[in-house]
Image (cartoon, rainbow, N blue to C red; front, side, top):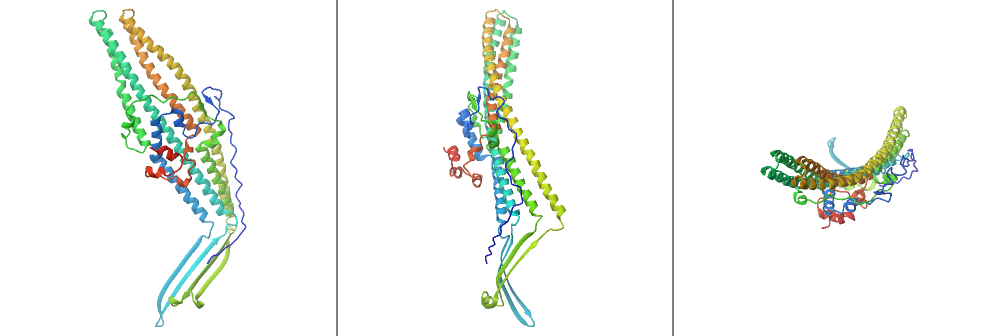
Length: 483
């Protein structure tokens, strides 16, 4: 049996429009030479900013294997099923095929009874309650996709930052070894002059103390390096120690381009996953107000059944065995208005709260971006000064060593210049790493990177079990995982 009913319903919820939020007209540092207001390089910013093939490979592996990203994918899939359930509730809520067979004895007569039927019950969506649930579920699903994007953006940034820290630590180890070599030469010079009676043993003892203090730095840096590799392994969904071969050879710290395109503050509303997610949660709650208002009105429903009942199974669907029924009714919670109206006010209050949360998210995003931009610019300026200081420090070591060898200055001058140079060269390596890391933070604050999955529908955001499965997907995934 098929029942078709056309009813012109209405929707009691408010007409939702994305709310206005305070956004600055331009960045505070918009006049700096290192940044421009052009559209930022998206979505593969890590490739374009650093041009490091190994970093590109590590990001690709993280997108394929990271467990937190897979968990976020499964949350998207859950929200899709919630939406499917909400859509299904718009159709007849009860659709049952029933059947029974009985054999019993009555007054020494054995009787049989057979019954087959189909039942339908449909609550009509007169006031838009079910449609409101669909809008809620759809907006919630979009919020879960935004949450997935947020995990993706955070993951890419974490991989890039840890990779930069690894390269920075390796550079610091190289600096330490260079300082050890320089200080060893000074120690041998001081020892030779002491053995020749030109100076006291004090010079040699001071040189030896400085040398072993510098050597003591190496184990701490090696420990930090291994810890960073372990952290990177976790991001790639691998056990610790599995990335040793990939990162064994020390390479230079990735360098930032001379100018970075950061777009405009208004772009944050579109790019930042947390802003998009907050707005979608607000939209979902707006639909819930309509659902609550619909409960104030009567719910109309119709029900129907058709079937056959006979005392012999062969007589089903024959002659007078046909049965049917049709009925309509309504339910109205007439004496519950206090509770129902309170629920409307409750849903509205939640909407107002999420509205303020959305505006706060926009403000926090702007602060986050501004802080990242100024940190990047100031790290650039700091690096220029430190590079000059490091060059001067290295020249002072050469001059003081030559003058000490010729007896023109005391060894205290050599010790001072060696100590200062060791600190200066280490600071230079850290400063270069800080510039690259602060650039990563800029792109993270701008919300860049999630667009790599833009051509994939939510249904395609499933955990890839093998590389072959991912290669079957579109666009970016084939590019990233191709050999």
